[in-house]
Every structure is written in structure tokens, then in C-alpha cells.
View 1 (cartoon, helix red, strand yellow):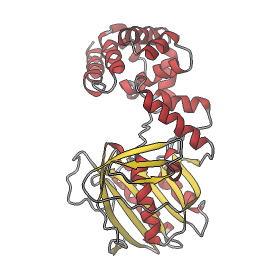
View 2 (view 1 turned 90 degrees about the horizontal axis):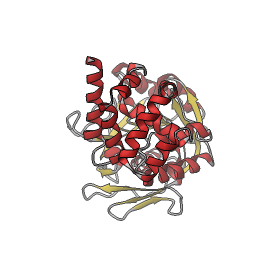
View 3 (view 1 turned 180 degrees about the horizontal axis):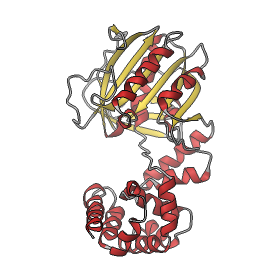
View 4 (view 1 turned 90 degrees about the vertical axis):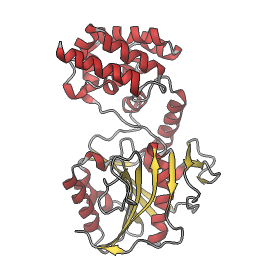
Length: 365
């Protein structure tokens, strides 16, 4: 009973705090699950680390999208909170084994598309500083590799600036904080696209693509439409996905970039999942790869998470992230914080001097 009460509190809090204001459907469904003793007992059959509402709700959504829970799909489609709550409980009780199987197999995925608004100007700036006319993109923690299409999307900023392809089916937007504009140079030709992930998602696989949709909240159709456009764009030129530990796979990924192109490694809120020792080893892997060629690293991580990247003196857990740019040139490291961002890139403050060549070099310790 004690465990059930704790689980009930988790689901109630998710509904009343996390989903409130952004997803009325999930607010109603999560609270209903937390108030149902039968539902809580079913959720307790899921391994403890997979009982969080984001996982269970995504598993239920996956069943609805797959046509295996038609009542739930209809309630979601009608945006009927009461019907969705009842159907979610019925689906969970009648298909407990299926919910458990999906939850065990899958990891929830964040499909925030604001990342491109951060990555595009930072990658372009990295190429400028390295004097590169072509780049190879390497995304760490790539999920489905959607960051690897950054040069093929259109981006509009709140100050009227735009980057990328205005005719692309994928159009992103980001608000600008402060009065400094982002660099407006076009990205050089992208000659390689490589993703590294422990469990990469294949955008050409129907089950994998459906799971990405299932991780979205069902009453946010504009996000679902944007994700569908991103998946379609990525599927036209699927990236090379390497499965494994990012630190160990990094040398192989960099080797996949042609010698006459600049490898640009990107991390967007990926390093926070690694212990400090692994983050330092990641930095050393980049340094080792640069003994024979120039390598760049673009990061968007929490304050103090990315080793070697300055923090503007900001405090950790301050609610925003630091946009970092590091260039490794024959073991000389030039690292700079070029901006801040909030809400996974939906708000951006570009702070780098547009005429800066790079920060002063330092060694990797």
C-alpha cells in the first residue's frame, strides 16, 4: 500500500504539475491513473525504473497509434479528457503485458526541434573559425538523428533573421533574447552525417517512427505534424547510425568524415547523462582525434556540464544552458561560450563577438 500511495502521488503530481497547462488530456489521464488502485497495481508490474508516467503514457499512446487501442485513440482524437481517462485505464488493465513489453523495450525520446536554431549558427561559426568549406556532422546521443538535418531546415528568429532553407518542409523558430544577432552565414556543404546512440532510432522503420510520435502528447497536433515533417526529411537521406557508447565510438565516427572536411561533433543535453569521468574522457577523445586533423565540438549543455566550456560565471541549475564552441587543432584547444539558450533552444541569446577568431588556446588536462 505504501508503494501504491507513492506511485499515486507521482502520477497525480505529473498530471497536476508537469502536464497542467500544456496537455489537458495527459493532466486528466495521469490523475485518473493515480486514483485507480487497479491501474496502480498494473503499473507496478512494470520494472521500477520504467514506471514513470512519461514511459507508461507513451506506451499507451503507442498502442493507440498502432490501432491496438481504438477506444483510447478515439478519445485522444476527440480531445475528450474523461473518455481518455477511462479508456487509458481500460487499455492498461486489458493489455498490461503489452504495456510492460513496450515500456521495457523502449526509452522515452525528447523531440524538441528548437535545437536546430542553436546548432545552425554555432556549426557555421565553427566552420568559419576553422576555415572549412565542408563539414561532417557527428551527433552524440542522436536518437533518430534529426539534428543531422540541420542544414536542410528553415529557421526564423524572433528578431526577423532567418537561416537555412526557406522552402524546407521543416520550419523552426526561436525567440531572441538581447540585442545581439546570430551570425547569418550559410552552413558549408555537409558531406557526412553520423549519429551515435546506445539505442539509435531508425527513421525508416515504421515501429521506431511511431514510437517517436508516441512520446509526444496526443493533444499537441502541431508538434506531431512538425515531427512527421522532420521524419520525412530525415528519411530522404538517412544518416549513418552507430550503436554504442559515445566515448568509445567517437574515433570511429570522426574517421567516417572525409579528410578534406571538418568533423563537427554536436552534443545537445547529452553529456548530462554521463558521469564527470566519462565527460572528461569524451574531451580527451576529441583531443586525440585532433592530432591529425582539426576537429570542432558544438555543445548545448547545462551550466558547468560541458568540460572546458566557460560558463559566463553562471550558477549551475540556473534554468538555462550554455552554447559552447571548441576547436581542437593539433591538440591546441580553443574553447568559448558563444551564447545561452532556454527551453531546449526555443529562446536564444547569442553572445559571441562576430569578429572573434576563437578564444585563447589551452591544453586539455
